[in-house]
Image: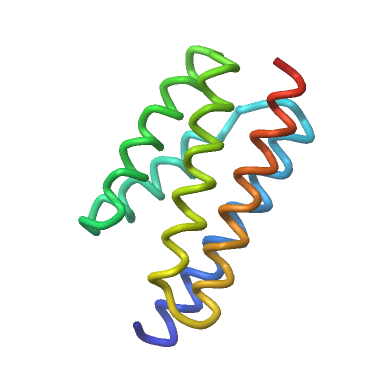
Length: 115
């Protein structure tokens, strides 16, 4: 992966983590679909990550339906899948991916307390 691609991936991960934190704090899914769509597009290009992309599609649907239990279930699963996929990443990418997975899992726990 080029330095620019690595830098962009790190920036996208950091922005996503910040977005997750903000939306959980505000208890609002407003605007989340744009970030999810970007990740679906990125992940769908990689056969190893298509399951994550599929779960993101399901998460987007659960958010639009305001299905709290399904949101928690999917975010927990996505967090676990993301952490597991960090094993295939390298260097700072692996750290960022693992951090993203932990943010998803943590957000799921917080949301779970609200539903």
